[in-house]
Amino acid sequence: MAEKPNSMSIDVDNRVVDVATRGRHAARIPDTPERQRLARQRTIREIVFGAQDGVLTTLGIVTGVGGATADRATILVTGWLALLVGAISMGVGEYLGGKAEREVVENAIEFEQREMLEQPEAEFAEQLAYYRLKGFTDDEALTIVRRLQKNPSIWLHEMVRDEFGIDVREAESGGLRPAFGMALSFAAGGALPVVPYLFPLPLSISMMLALVLATAALFAIGAFAGRLVGRNPYLKGLEIVAFGAAVFAISYLVGHYIPPLFGHGVVSVGA
Image 1 (tube, rainbow, N blue to C red):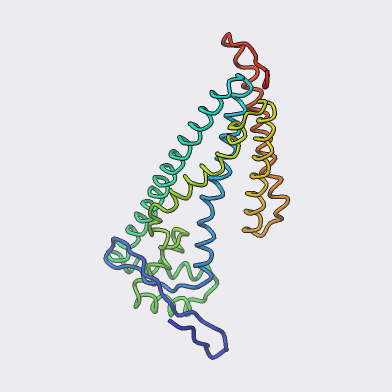
Image 2 (spheres, rainbow, N blue to C red; image 1 turned 180 degrees about the vertical axis):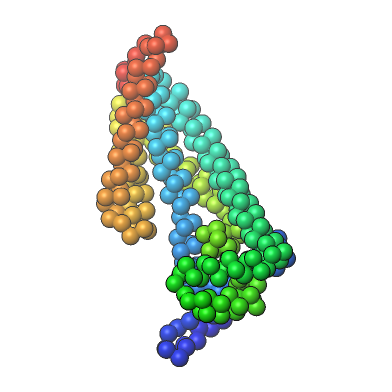
């Protein structure tokens, strides 16, 4: 619906959005371009998290294996397996985690709907109390809640927000898109530390190239996330790189010093 200026010459978006819930009535609440933009920005989470985790996980594994063996084939097989298994695991985990979270939200909404239908007087008094806590007078709160009571879908939205601190739209399904986004971003990030080992270079050079590519990718991911949340992109990039450096150091030390505990000789990278 087109935007119409009100008496104060302020543009008001009159669009509404239906929220499919399994209760007696579905919520039909006002929607805004700002909320929609924020929702799109929040979908970047799985991409940033997946790519970052892919870089760190695969870098740690190939570095650890590279510190324990000089067999390039072993490093490559281990790296690609880690990438494949990690991508599948991240995708499935994102899907199941999102599904479980939505089910929790749906249960809270359905619980509130039942209370509104079975105990309308108690819910009316509860909503009055919430508006008093917000600073409205008794008469103002009474006027607002009476008006809300005439529009059950908006009342449901207000009650769920005030009582549970959630938006009823959080019950909407994200489908398979977040899961695929997480899996593909993990695979893209995880491929970078493995690529240098495809070339016939000394393993020490391959390891350094993997580290350089991973560092550049981590910095880019951090800078992108920083711009997205309004933080200093350079500091955010350096923060992510610092975590990557810690993973690199720990994995190398583990691969270099743990094998001797199990009778495996220490093999220097490039030997």
